[in-house]
Image (cartoon, rainbow, N blue to C red; front, side, top):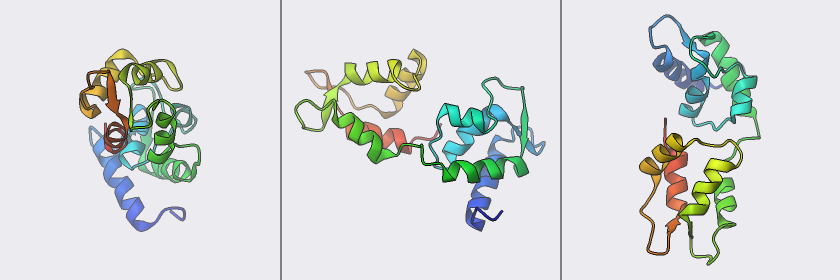
Amino acid sequence: MADLKDVEVEKAKFVFSVYDWDGSGSMDAMDIGPALRALNLNPTLELIGKMGGTKKRGEKKVKLDEFLPIYAQVKKEKDMGCYEDFLECLKLYDKEENGTMLLAELEHSLLALGEKLDRDELDDVFKDCMDPEDDDGNIPYAPFLQRLCDHKP
């Protein structure tokens, strides 16, 4: 594929094989998002939908030759946040400019803004990525964000 280097194609084939649960040579379109995230991309839910991702399992299957162009296209997208972008956003909540923010503000933001998480998803994120809050209810946001960006579903 012209837009992807050989090493990227190999990585995409490996990730695709992981999501080809039954070895049939296709993966469920619901797994497009997780597969792209496993390839260190950060697509929005809207972009995943545009690329053919579905919200329900069993609606559609995707073959490798369909997945590779999706990967190449999403790789080119500029509308994906990265660690530095997210860090700048969280700094807005850092009232004392000491690298911490109120856990309650982070929780509210993740539940109410943008591509909202539901309570179960938030609990999983906090369990996997969160340091304990201090006596004032603050958490260090940079380590949380780093673990979140490095985390693979």
